Image (cartoon, rainbow, N blue to C red; front, side, top):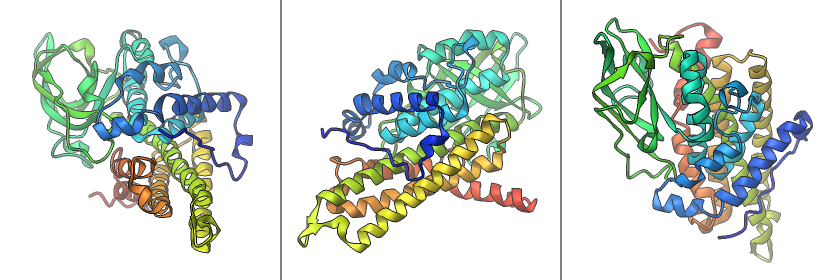
Length: 392
C-alpha cells in the first residue's frame, strides 16, 4: 500500500474562516484517515466488507453525534465541526462516512430531537461511544422518492404495537443494534419507532453484489409481527416532516463529505500529473491537463464556500431544507465530475485499486442517489423559488 500523501487544497485560504477548534477537529480526523483508513480501504472495498474494527475509532474522533450535547454523551460541537468530520472521513471513503452519517443524523438526531428524556438517556450515550450502532428505515422496496407512500405499518395491541413491513437499502442494517423505523399507524399517520435487534420477527438480511459503497454494510429491515413496546415510540414529532428533518441533517453532512471525495481525487490527479512523463515532460505541463486541474480546484473552492456558508446558517438555526438540498446536489455533482476527470488524467492506472479514484467514482454513484436523488433535489429548489409544486 502506498503511503497517504494527501494535501488538502485551500485555494481561497478558507482556513482563516475556521476556529482553532475546527482545525484541531479536522486535522485529528485527517490524521486518523491516513493512519486507519487509507492502508486498509482498498482491500475492504475489493472484498466488499465493512471494517467493523474501526467503529470504536470513529467514536474516539467524535464522529458519532458530534452536535449531540454532552449531557447525552456527545461532544457538543457545532455544525461546521460536524461537516469537517464528514469531509475528512469521506476523503477516506464514502461508505465509512455513511456509517458515521447514519449513526449521527439518522439515529442519534431523531432520538435527540423527537425522543423522550428516558429514550435519550437510554440510547444516546451508548450510540456516541459505538457500544450501540443504529440504522434508519424509511426507504421501501416500492417507495423511495415518495416516502409518504410507505406501507410499513403498526397496530395498537393494548400493551404494545405490532409492526409489519419492510425497508430496503439500509446502511448499517446487518450489524445495527437498533433501527429508527418510520411506519404508519392505523390512521395513516407516520411515526418513528425504536426497534431493537432482539425483538422477535425482526431480521436484517444483507444486500450483496454492489458495485458502489462496497466497504459499507447495506441490508434490508424485515418486520414480521414485531412486538414493539409502547415506550419505544418517538413521542415528540410525527408526520412525514419528522423523517425529513433527519434527512436534512444527513444531507448537510453529505454536502461536506462529497468535498472530501473530490479533494482526494484532485490531489491524486495533481500529484500524478507532475510525476507522469510523456513526450519528454510531465503531463501536468500540457494545456488540456492544466485545464482539467484548474477547473477541479475552481469547483472545489466554490463547493467549500457553499458548505461553509451553509454551516454558518445551520449554526444560527437559519438553514432551510431547500438550501441544504442545493448544497447536497451541487457538491455531489461536482465530486462526480472531478472523479471522472481525475480518472482520465491517470489514464489506465485510474481504474486500478492502486489509486482511490475509481472507488470514489463508484461510491459517488450511490451518494448522488441516496438522501434524495439528484433530480428530486433540483425540484426542491424549483418549488422553493417558484412556489409551484412539481411533485404533484
